Amino acid sequence: MNSASNRFLSRRGFLAATAGFAMSLPMRPGRASAVDERSIKAAPSQARVAGSDRPPASAWAYNDTVPGPVLRVRQGQPVRIAVENGLAEDTTVHWHGIRLPNAMDGVPGLTQPPIAPEASFTYEFTPPDAGTFWYHPHADSLVQLGRGLAGMLIVEEAEPVAFDRDLIWLLQDWRLAADGEIAGGFGSAMDAAMSGRVGNLVTINGTVPADQAVRAGERVRLRLANAALARIMALRFEGHRPIVLAIDGQPCEPHEPEDGRLVLGPAMRIDVALDMRGEPGGRYRVTDDFYDGLAYTLTTLAYDNAPPLRTRSLDAPPALPRNPLPEPNLDNAIRQEIVLQGGMVGGGKLAGVGGMMGMAMPGMKGAAAWAINGTSMIGDGHAGMMPQFMLRRGVTCRLTLRNETAWWHPMHVHGFSLLLLSRNGVPAPHRQWQDTVLLAPKDTVECAFVADNPGDWMLHCHVADHQMAGLMTVFRVT
Amino acid sequence: MKLTYALTALGLAVATPLPALAATIQAVMYKNPQCSCCEAYATYLEHNGFKVEIKPVNNLSQISSNAGVPADLEGCHTMMVDGYVVDGLVPVDIVKKLLTERPAIAGITLAGMPAGAPGMGGEKSETWTVYAFTKDGKGPTVYASE
Image 1 (cartoon, each protein chain N blue to C red):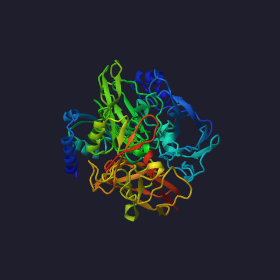
Image 2 (image 1 turned 90 degrees about the vertical axis):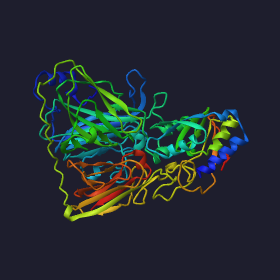
Image 3 (image 1 turned 120 degrees about the horizontal axis):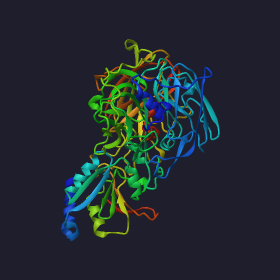
Image 4 (image 1 turned 60 degrees about the vertical axis):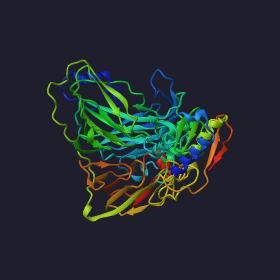
């Protein structure tokens, strides 16, 4: 299988999983000390994103691999990750979705000084929540993420959860030029004011997907992460019925996705239980049909000819154990509203960003193309960013996210997971917690969280072009 | 407003009867799949003697850049017509002028999405400058104003 998370996915692991009917457990490295020590280095590298038969593209990578190494850590166990900067520009690492101390959040200027070239910084935190998370730079985000800097961060449950296999698909989207190199033109005004830098090649775990070898009857935990700059994905598994177990790392009530489509905005993760109910020797497509007229086959589930692993189908997958998230108190909540404004609209102006009517695209030359509540914060984060709102530690914040624009936005809140309450007035089902909430044009989403973690926290669109061009704000928990 | 353009185009066609323009002009439009004003522009062209094939693409800025459109003069879509690039909401009389005159350029562009332009809503509130561009590194020049 095209997923290289650990030895669990090796041939040996596959055979072990298929040899008997016993559910195997995720493997984890032995630990010599109480603190789990890791190190990653960001540096220029080469990546064979278009396949082994094509010349590699000049990319930026963690530890010379695209994506970066899968970091598997354990819920409740302290981890120390040394990050070395081998790039020619500043960087930081953001541990996306992890609830951690503000100083470890990786936002340059706001939570730490950026890591200068040849310098390093050690992040230390104890992940409270088990689940599927990821890491990426938060400096020059558009370019650094677009050149390949991203990796999976798996927090294993304190009590292991059994599946036949645990698979990772870290999805990246590359805009390649005709020569196979990563195309320039980062920060184009058109991308900034429209749907962002969507690419022309989607990879799974760093390479154009080959067939995914599967065995009839097995139950797989598939961890999907959208690490694209801008591409929204809507995955369908032909002939299969994936059950959503967790969104953005946080377990929800197990459910089949609406219309059978797994919709992943940039930075979102979904864990599914995927029962391999196809025929031995069968082939089943995995497609992405998010953009009208641009559906494509991402990969194919290619079944081994071996007889099914089990003769009887399994019961519905049980819910994953819940994480220790503080329960919002809605009776006594502080209401805040975030209104997303701007972007290209009919009439040639930016709604709420000063009525851009001129000859050029909005967002030209680093100017704002978007705003939150009438204010445009551009870039990646910097010192002196004034909070949009303040919350006293411990209060429940009932947050309304209102999209006035004509475009989609995956809105990411640092430091917290939000309980989804409703979307466009309809109560949100499945008790979902998310750190990245995808808003369709004109959507209004209500959510809530307990402001239990002090600091200045960023809230921004995870379409990197949108963030850089003004769709970003900060709130403070005192 | 559309009527004005239609009449202008008709006037042009009547005043300068060119065999090349008598037949339907084939065009291919590359557009963002999530943007709708380009489709209104395509309809406007189809009412004016064009047949427009619409191709939604996710890397429009790359296509536009490869076509030679200067980054600071990008329109909201890129169209290939009879050997030329027509970028943005260029009025049809100017497109037909281009196809008639056949200058030694790569194409023309009306930057941004100005109010009142064909396919857009709103009232025209300013003079539009349509620029000509080449792929030989020279700067853009004014091709037409309206």
